[in-house]
Image (cartoon, rainbow, N blue to C red; front, side, top):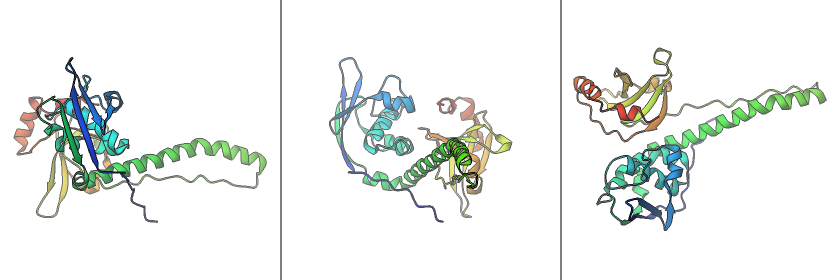
Length: 259
């Protein structure tokens, strides 16, 4: 049976975002006139303990982007999948840095441009729901079975297990993953390159937390990668020598330290 594609609905695609700076230097954000607070987004990823900011590409704008995405999408998986791109497309460009602003944004083109990541987020939500149902079933089945065995010993029950479907991932530079292949099990790595070579080879290159270049991973090996989160790493790979030097000078360290 073919798996149905997950569906996502939005009541609208245009939103008014306001940013206000207080006398004490804190920044407040409003979506369609309703204030959003940083605490909800910080429980997911605490990029900025000091709260919101905007106008550059950093931790404060990342916190702002996550909070805004939670408010407009009303879906945690979608917000987590899109907020780093939302930061680069919108929040980092609201200049000047930290100054009051009002922007009316239309996210239609944004969603079209990032439809692959939206699809990944929705499939992850769908899989999480399936696993939750499977866990509930594993808890409840023995209880139901014992009850039935007592009352109807002639009736046999068989558990129905929900299998996780490994969805096709569309990776981006900066994605943080955990490797589950036995040879590197538990190793965390960053996607430092996404390549599409002339011979129709598509894949990603990984940098391990200990600095090892783990080379190229093509679609058939992606099942051994467990997605953790997107980071705001922007890296243009040139050669392995530069990659090694960048690791040695600590360029990637902050991104491995986010979990």
